[in-house]
Length: 117
Length: 112
Image (tube, rainbow over all chains, first blue to last red):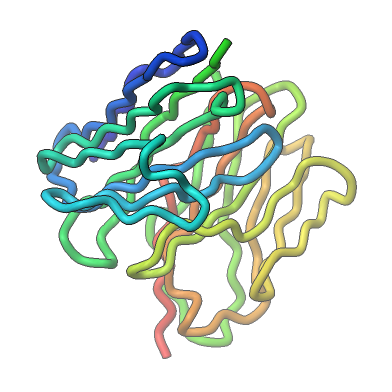
């Protein structure tokens, strides 16, 4: 079945550095991908919607310049956390839509645990 | 490692029928449990969650779920579905520290 690969699964970085998280659709083309963030003991929060070939749509309160999203191809979207700080430590998860319609199935990556020291 | 199993990939119901979507997880420790819903054309939304306390959890739009620890289950229920409940439903679990694990989702189609 369709698989979304998210890499890395865990990353530890120092404060002030940037971290890139990749989200790949392995056997389907994804015109739309979503990036979520989860704080401990809280539910997922949508950060942005990534559309292939165009700018991402960010949710209110999400800093565009801090969380850079690039969806350069139909199988890859990346989230770069720039100048990371300890408060950026969180669990980030992507999902990709298998198909071009709004009712197409949604598949999730396994997430990335980011720890900023 | 945690795993989540959703029993049905597709469910078709008529309006006013009762709904129960199965979710089982494999993890021996304390867990947090979630049901998410994605309506056509919309992003993922939290339907309900269980962290502790009363194992019968009530969520939005008339949904509820019951955590049965002995069965490692967290089934989602609604007494009477509506056409607007047509969506994809995801069960998810984590232990509060490690990665969130999702089930593969159940597509619910409610016919008017």
